[in-house]
Image (tube, rainbow, N blue to C red; front, top):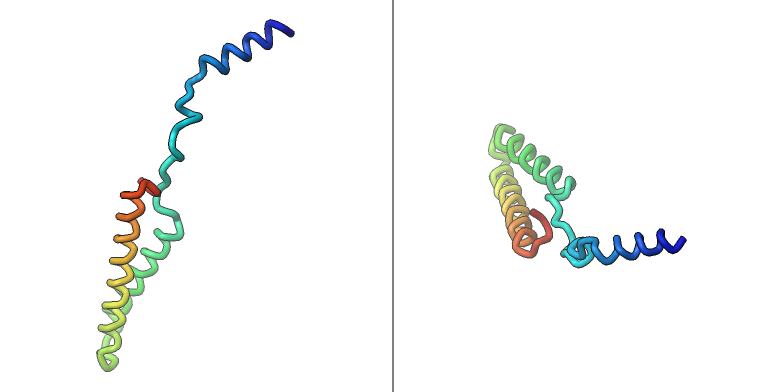
Length: 86
């Protein structure tokens, strides 16, 4: 029993401490964000090919989708700068 305790103590003392003290691992972009981006790109494509002007509302909807895509890009840039994602 004493030998096992010494071996365990030696393993604890000589094990790398970096795993205990390191920062939390960075994550990739969440799957939900990727799915949202894909849905926005699909919506933009469908709106662009919907035909007709719809009183200018279709073009405005495309602008709003583009703005949403821009917000996602800015959110990812912020997350990367603050080490929330890779």
